[in-house]
Amino acid sequence: MAIMKAVINSQPNKIYITNRSSLEGRIDPNPYHFERINSLKKLQENNELLKLSDVVKSVKTTTKNISENQVYIGLENILSNSGEYIPSVEKQSISSAGIFKKGQILFPKLRPYLNKVYLAEFDGICSTEFHIFDCPIYRNEFLAIYLRSDLIVNQTKYLMTGNTLPRLQTEDINRLPVPKISLEKQDEIIALYQNAYKQKQQKETEANLLLVSIDAYLLNELGITIPKKDNSLQDRIYTISFSELTGGRFDVFDALNKDSKIEGGIFLNKKLKEVGVFKKGQSITSERIFDGIYPVIAGGQSSPYSHNQFNFEGDVITVSASGAYSGYVWYHNAPIFASDCTVIKTKDPKVISTCFLFELMKLKQKEIYNLQQGAGQPHVYASDLAKLNIPIPPRHIQEKMILYIQDLRIRAKQLQFDAKSLIENAKAEIEQKILGYN
Image (cartoon, rainbow, N blue to C red; front, top):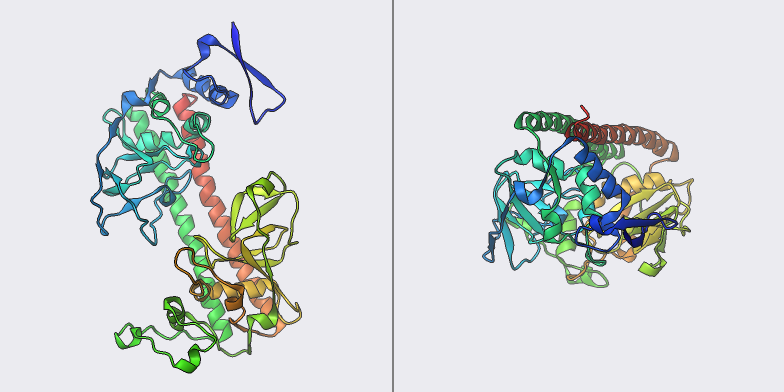
């Protein structure tokens, strides 16, 4: 007898009915979403299913004695979908952590839709928001690949609970379905994935080399030579006269900029305030964010939200004002809704194009990053950006340089797309193998 009706958010005009016998211990609608149920049916079609708790051993060793030399992994250190490790610039303050060993699996409890499953490449410590798994009867490499697949994400994103910090409960994780697969087939799947991943890395390396070459090209064309850094003790002591301090600043970041400034060269330099128009991105509250067609650029970083209107038509530069991306520079050639950032556009396109101005500011990225002030939440102010020195080549030279750089960026973007496609295609093929379709 049907006993529950649930309106699923993604299908607001449909009512789903389930029987008492189909309930899995929860009566909220999300676990019975058609996408999750369909994934389960596919897994059951050609496989005997086990529970995750049947195939893994949960490692619960923790420590409060944390040294600076230990590698700490938080959720922010794992790349979504691919499970790649991204080192942190700074280690956050932590009171306790889980201890993991090379080869073990780190499976997140928090925000499972981000799909941040990591196969440890070294020994270290991690956030307690991770479960640490060892798999005595399966290959850990295979299980990590499987746990990152859509077959599992289509389970976990409908099993999470909570709104502000949606997470998976341990009992729901324990019940995740795992197909019974031979070691030979596991090895075949691991080899397929590793081959695709190796090709992906090669293409990403090629793309990065193209992007890195942009700075060298610009410096050469502008006639700017970066002096070799002197790391002697004398050169690491910064001095300034009292007259220079009047109306200015002298702090660690300002001192660092003595080594990172890129200016001079064979063309006239002007202050950014002479060639650019500055506007502040409007603040936006969560109540004003909703699905639309224009991306919300918050602090210079695209959020997963969109807005139904734009406040900048495009051909603008955004510089993140604060937060983790403080001082980072982006160019947008399409309409956006900008928030919590400084938005810059050229005053006179006949003097300098906004696109070329962006390339110069990106060249000066380190210098702009070092403009930040403050301890708790560092901030980059428009008043400091305004003082940047900007080389101004003739317009026809700008056009030549932009065409060359755009070609490099297009080639790099294609390589990045090809790299992403390699993994996506491999994951699709692996899913078919797991489901027993080939």
